[in-house]
Amino acid sequence: MMLDPVQSDSTTPPARLRVAVLTDAPRVAGSELWLLDVLPRLRPDGIQATVFLRVEEKLDGLAERFEEGGVTVHRYEDLQALPELSRDFDLRIVQGWTPGTYRTLLPALRSPRMVISHDQLDFHYPQPLRLTYRETYPWTKAAPFRQADRLVTVSEWAGAFMRRDMRLPDVQVVTNGVKVDRFRPATPEDRAALRAEFGFTGFTVLVPGRFAPEKNQWASVRAARHAPELDFVFVGDMDSSVGQLVQGYAARLRLRNVRFLGRRWDMPELYRAADALLQPTLAENQSLVTLEAMASGLPVVTTDIPAQAELVQDGVTGLTVPAQPDVLARALRALAVHPERTAAFGRAARDFVLSRHTLEHTVAKVRDVLLTPPVAHA
Image 1 (cartoon, rainbow, N blue to C red):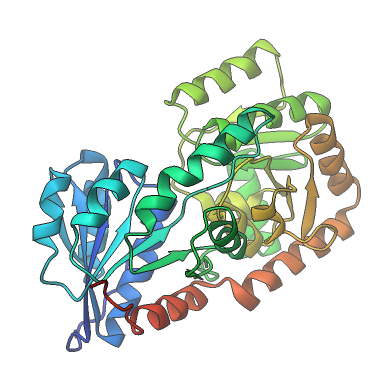
Image 2 (cartoon, rainbow, N blue to C red; image 1 turned 180 degrees about the horizontal axis):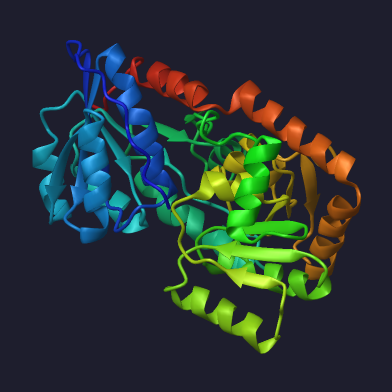
C-alpha cells in the first residue's frame, strides 16, 4: 500500500470548522488512505482537521504524510482519553475498525459527532455463515451508530443496507473517488517498458488486495488452475496467515502461471502494465482497488455482489460473474481472446470513473456534508 506525497498550500485560511477525526486503526488500510486524500484538500475551505492516531509504528509514515499536508496529528495510547482530547472541536468524526470502538467512544463524545463507515456490512459467504453475519454483524454496530448525530457511508448500496437492514433512517452517502492523474492508462511506449520491467509476457491478470477470507484469493488461485494459458500476479501482504496459506496452496498445485509479488509501492505502474483485474471478492463497501484499476483503463472481472455491481457494469466496463473458479477463468479467457472488446471495456471503465468517481467528486461531497453541520443531540 502506497502513501502518496501530499501537496500542501503555503497559506492556511481562517478556520470555519475545526474537526477532530478519531480512528482506532492499527495499521494503514483503505479507510486511512481515504482520510489522507480528502482531509488536506478541505483546508482551502477553512475546514481544519486534526487526526487522532494510535501510537503504532505502522502508523508513523501516515502521521508524517498528514503533517506534510497541513493536517495536525495527535497520537494517543488510550481510547478513553479521546473524549476529553476532542471536546473543544466543532465536530467529532469517528472512523472505527471495531464495533467495540463505536460502543465505547460514541456515547462518551461531546456532540455533534459523526460516523464515517467504510464497513463491508454484508459478507456473501455460503450459508449458513452468511445468514449468521446478516443476523449478528449489522446489529453489533446498529445500536452504537444511533449515538451519532450523523451517519455517512461510501456507497449507495451500503446506504440502502444501513437504512433497510440496520434500520438507521438517516444515512448520507459520499462515494469514493481516486486520483485520475495518478491512476491512468499507459501510453503504448510506457506499457511496453513496464511490461518488460515486470516480466509480463502473456495476458496478465492482476489480483491485488489484502489477504483475507472475504477477498477470496482461493478462488483466484483455482481460476489460474482452470486457465493455465493466462498469467496471474498476486499483490498483497504475504506475511498474514491467509497470505501464507494461499501461497502454500498455489505451491501444492504446482501452478506455473502464478506469481506472488508481496506488498508493493508501485500499484499505478502495475495497473498500467496488466491486461485485466480479477477481484472475486465476497464483501466490499466501495472498493478503491476496483476504482483504481478502472481509472487505469483496466477491464475488471469481479463477483456480482451489490457493491461491485454498483461500479462494474457487466458487458460494458467489465464482467460480473459468480465467484466460481471455472466461471472466473472463462470470463478472463473471453477477455484474452477478444482484445478489441477488452480495450473497449477499459476505455468505458475510465470514462465511468471520470464521470462520477474522481477524488474531486469525493472532496466536494465531503465538503458539503461537513459545512452543513448535524444537529447536536440534547
